Amino acid sequence: MMDVMDAVELMRTVPTTLFLGGEKRDAENGATFTVFDPATGDALTEVADASPGDGMKALDAAVAVQREWAATPARQRGELLRAVFEKITARADDFALLMTLEMGKALPESAAEVKYGAEFFRWFSEEAVRIAGRYTPAPAGNGRILVTKQPVGPCLAITPWNFPLAMGTRKIGPALAAGCTMIVKPASETPLTMLLLAEIMADAGLPKGVLSVLPTSKSGEVTGPLIDDPRLRKLTFTGSTGVGRMLVEKSAKGLLRTSMELGGNAPFVVFDDADVDKAVAGALLAKMRNGGEACTAANRFHVANSVREEFTAKLVDKLSSYKLGPGTDPDTTLGPLINADQLEKVGELVQDAVGAGARVRLGGVAPEGSGYFYPATVLDEIPAQARILKEEVFGPVAAIAGFDTEEEGIAAANDTEFGLAAYIFTRDLDRALRVADAIESGMVGVNRGVISDTAAPFGGVKASGFGREGGSEGIEEYLETKYVALEP
Image: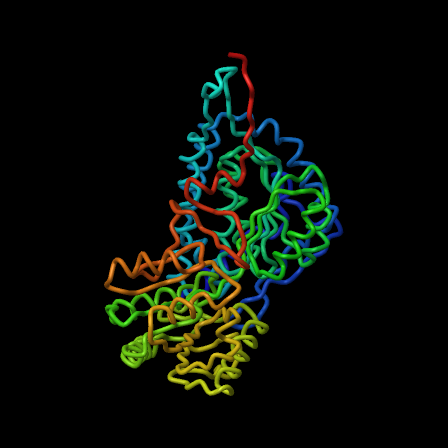
């Protein structure tokens, strides 16, 4: 087991107040809420519970410094982000342990997220100096066209619990690089990582007011007035499709610019000519990353019937070695789910599938005892009416169904309202390109189980949202285009 004193010391020093306008403050009314350890269900600490008044103070601070931050040279903004990247890297062990304590994932998973999350600051530190427009003569010869890019203005970011660092840095990095100020409302389950990030950003020299972090147990009460305020110009959200729809509706009144990274129901399609061993290795990555609690996680495994038994047997063999336990245990490869509600949902979807006729090949029953643990599970022969083919399971459950023809595989993959990520395995390059074109998804992995990359645009279509994060496209979400007409 990890040295208990490491956790005790970290929890003694981690910030638990609001980070409001660049300062650590208690909540306006002194309220707090509890952050729990999902491995035990016990309380970790108490965190300041922001009020609507605190939210407005944060917006006041963001508006007050917006013009000055936008006027800060791009090189200077980029160097600050680079400095924060270095500080995150230097404290990688602290960030990893903190994420494991509040979110539950195994320490190697947390360490991987620290590396991934920090990289967004390095990437956008470089993109800050590449914001460019264009200058061209008008085709009619009656003038010149000047196109410039300007920061959209104060932004609100609402982040989820499953990647407490990376889902924040993926938004903060491009916003600050573009010259925008930002308020972050982290998930109430996992606010500590974002508060620690804010602290080291202040240590790196971030001007006061440019960033605020407001943990709260009353998300709608705090964010609602911000969204209604005409001074806020951008809303970015990562979370469920249901909440995303409500936020889009609410933001429409003020024509607020929005980007939404919403739910997923990723298909994992294995064709009859696939390298089965490679497909199994890819399945382990696509399914088990973050314990299955990822919007890009493979949810539905559509496997050609001619190789389905081989694929299933090999997947079961590999998953049988996964060790369930507290994320702080170095032997653990699968930590707990985030909370009791998520544990109940995963169990409910599994039981629904089994009741409809699915065959349990591995797992399928939560162990007794404290914590929110669910074992690696493989279900085969999933009937078409099973809810698990329609709903995002967000847990370590692989649901396998067969198909015969390429057309059937594509149809099965597209049989969902979602369209975030998809995975296909085939040795045929023509088929790979043909199927990738046909699948209704914002991202497609071909013969690989991990597709996230800071240098690539991340986002979906259909009910999985709109807008892109990462890549050169990511900073465009925080920029407005201005056209200036010049005389000939």
